[in-house]
Length: 185
Image 1 (cartoon, rainbow, N blue to C red):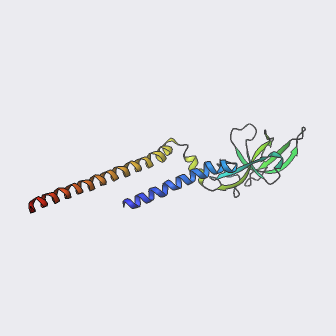
Image 2 (image 1 turned 30 degrees about the vertical axis):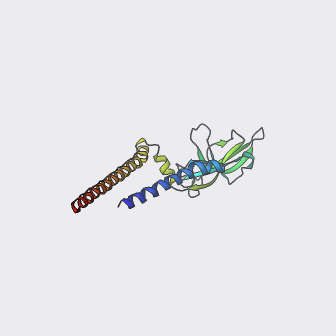
Image 3 (image 1 turned 135 degrees about the horizontal axis):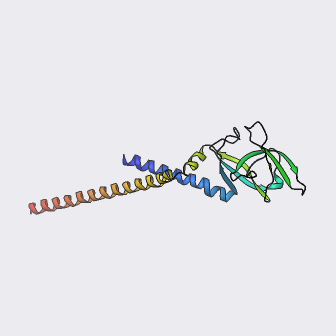
C-alpha cells in the first residue's frame, strides 16, 4: 500500500512540476505570453477554459485572419479575437476591426494598438485555464499546498516509525542472541 501511495505521490509531483514548467519556463524561453480564455466567443478555434499561448510580433506583421489578445477601448480585461479588417488612421498607423469566431457581428470598437508589438495567438492547451482560474480561490491554493505538505509529513512519520520498529527488532534480536550465548556457556 505504501508503494502505491509513494508512486502516486511521485506521479502527482512530476505532473505538477511539468505543468509549472509548461506554464512558466517554456513561454519565457520561447517568447510566448499566456492567457486564460474565460469566454466562448472564439469557439471552436479557441476553447473556453483553455490557456492560449501568444507570440509577441511586430504590429506591422498582423493581418486579417490573425487572432490577437488585446485590451479593448475602455476595458480592463483582455480579449482574444480575430482581426477581420485593417485600415490606417490619419497618422498612417493600423486600426483593427475584430470579431470572435462564435459571434455573429464585429466588435463595437476599433483597436489602435499602443505599442510596436502585439500578442498573436499561436496555440492552446484546452481546459488548463479552469485549473489556473481555480487557483484564484484561497481555499484551492491552500489545498494545493496543504495536501502535498500533509502527505510528505505523513510519509516521513511512517518512515521514521518503520525505522524505529526495525531498530527495536534488531536490538531485541541482539539481546536474545546474547542471552542464548550466555546460557550456552
